[in-house]
Image (cartoon, rainbow, N blue to C red; front, side, top):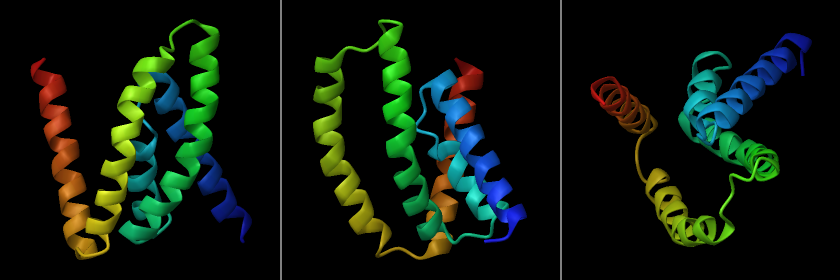
Length: 120
């Protein structure tokens, strides 16, 4: 792997980790667009790569947040267990939708979140 690509992946990961720790997002909000736009990944590969990285990001962020006393494990489990089903369903659906449609849906989600944040 060329050094410039390695640097881009490291910068992408750093940005995702920063946003994860700062805002509590999984990092995919930052990572997927950067992998698609900056590293020319297709949407499916970007999503899968992001999910693999988020395992590491979430574990480290949870440990750090736990050190500050901000983690309620019981609530995390109550949210996390149903999320597994949602992730499996989402993955199943993603494999049946065109890459372009996935990109459009992701963009619409980001716009909706931005509008909500601005209006809140």
